[in-house]
Image (cartoon, helix red, strand yellow):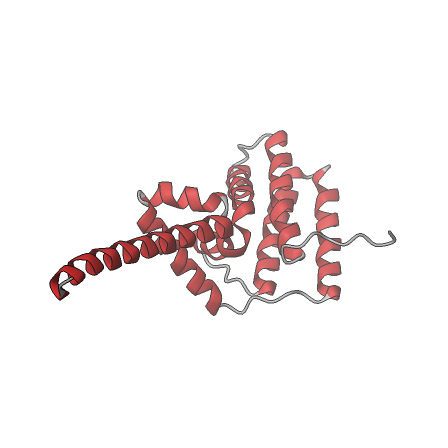
Amino acid sequence: MSTGTLIAIIVPIVVVLLVCALAAWMIMRRRRLQARFGPEYERTVEAKGSRRAAERDLREREQRHDALHIKELPASARDRYAHEWDQVQERFVDQPEDAVHDADRLVTSLMSDRGYPTEGLDQQLSDLSVEHGRTLDHYRAAHEVNGRSTRHEATTEELRGAMVHYRALFTELLHNGQKPRRSGA
């Protein structure tokens, strides 16, 4: 077999193998992003209009997040926040709008203490999406009701729903994404 024939056979095989390797790498990267960001992945694809643009945005979020100094809270701080949350929930019965506003402030304070920047809702959502993508829809819904309650346009049922939504993110932030441990069991 001549060298020219050998090259004509080997080069296409190498090209096909490289294309297959690249495709496999892209599929694995996409699956990793989907697993990490959960529903936030598809929401970002829809918002950006293409998978490529969305994945670039999500990777940029990861890089920004990696530069943050996110930390777990000491047990005493977790206990203090849990106590404050209980007080906010108790206040809901008599003052639902005030309780929702307090829940928003408490979540923002918790984010700050954990090391998340708290400037602007869009940046908060972007930073939280890296580790808390599965609860962001809760936060968006709660924040929307909180805004309407400021204008006294939210029903009591919507305010109750906002508290449930805030609690989802609050619990996840408080326990660093882990299930809270039950004492005494």
